[in-house]
Amino acid sequence: MKHLLKMLDLSGEEIVELLNLADQLKYELAHGIPHPHLAGKSLGMIFQKASTRTRVSFEVGMYQLGGQALFLSSNDMQIGRGEPVEDTARVLSRYLDGIMIRTFEQDEVETLAAVGSIPVINGLTDFCHPCQILADLLTIRERKGRLDGLKMCYIGDGNNMMNSLIVGCLKVGMEVAVSCPEGYDPAAEVLEFAAGCGDRFQLYRTPAQAAKDADVVITDVWASMGQESEREARKKAFAGYQINDELMAQAKPDAMVLHCLPAHRGEEITAQVFEAHADEIFEEAENRLHAQKAVMVTLMKD
Ligand code: CP
Ligand code: NVA
Image (tube, rainbow, N blue to C red; front, side, top):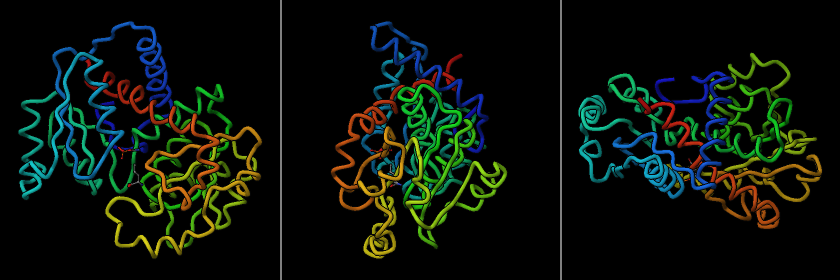
């Protein structure tokens, strides 16, 4: 593994190895066992979109690994004024040991990795959010004791979260059922990958069908960053695609609920369901730290 650009690039074994390392680092942190695997190393974090969890968990994670993280807002960088990503990649490769980037186009992340000479980690694009999916899988495995054979149901937009959950969950042997309105399907290359998994993948237009007997129910906002102008239209399109008590009645009685956050209560999830599953959702947020530390150690350790 040289980079973390999208879940499609990882094998099921690589995902499980990252989760195992994340578990170990989480245990060491909880027991005060130092793990300075990246002492003296620097991670640059380029943000073209807002962030709470990604920024803080990467910055703190790098500190706990003995290195440092630099917050690089695109507003303050030449890349925000049109300097080509190719030149940015060549320059940053000479100072840094790794780059985390949050941006719009997946192509920009792929170019950064192709042109630069250091590991690149995708901290969210319009296409995918691999760091979040690793944290989600870590949370599911912690709580359910396994991944293989469990059913993940995702209700809502065919966005970066749906794209990467479909791929990540299928790669580790889970069953996946998603539900979205027509016109909001996941990406074509994701559907193509899922089609290769036979009946382990199903796409329904009716959320209740997707939620049937699910072990894990997941959703995300209806309007992602960059889609603010579509908010009202999306509210109409997604009415009925909400995680509420009625929908949860379709899932297994001990089903978990996850949300990558930030959440819009009353839209994609009711406040009642959110609060009933707050332990899981905030553990999921914490697990960003442990999962990303595993990614950084895997990619950046000598
Ligand atoms: N879930 C997630 O990526 O959160 P932030 O946007 O706060 O980083
Ligand atoms: N789909 C959301 C995820 C935020 C973490 C977005 O892209 O805004």
